[in-house]
Amino acid sequence: MSEITKDQDSWLPKKRGSMSSVSSLDIKMKEIHSRAKDSVSTVSYVDEPGRHDDASRPAVQMENTYQLGPGKCFPVDAVNHILKDVLTNYLQEEKYEPELCRQMTKTVAEVVKARVKDLMIPRYKLVVIIYIGQLNNQSLHIGSRCLWDVANDTFASFIFRNTSLFALATVYAVYLE
Image (tube, rainbow, N blue to C red; front, side):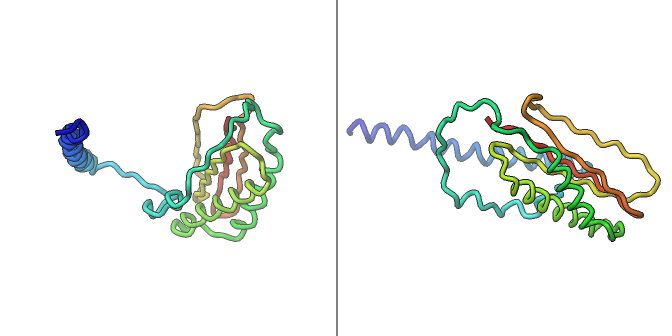
């Protein structure tokens, strides 16, 4: 028997063994889900997690630029103007309805992200978060935490109110080295 066939024979049992570890992982995940029936979790942005276009795109190889800082600063004032314009146009005449507001958060977030990307600011990753709630003389505190570089990363935020709802829009701009 040649050396190549011996190597292939020794490789096959290892491959079969790894398949059984996948099935044991599935069993562990089912146990975790069965224990966590009392907790509630929602995902508001992705309704169909199986639909991604990233798998069809080939990987792009980038050259090193050795650039450690942005060429120009993130335009916070321009982004604040975009947030004000989009929230006012979409929510000025709306009344609070939970299902409508759920869909409206997705729509407004997509529009804001597209308009900020149209500014063509290179090397910034954008995170857009929209909160819409009923305005009913209540108090609400919203906080966020993340790791970032104080010198290069920033955010823009705008609060909108009408007679029946409030909206808070935040755009985080994180510099990508």
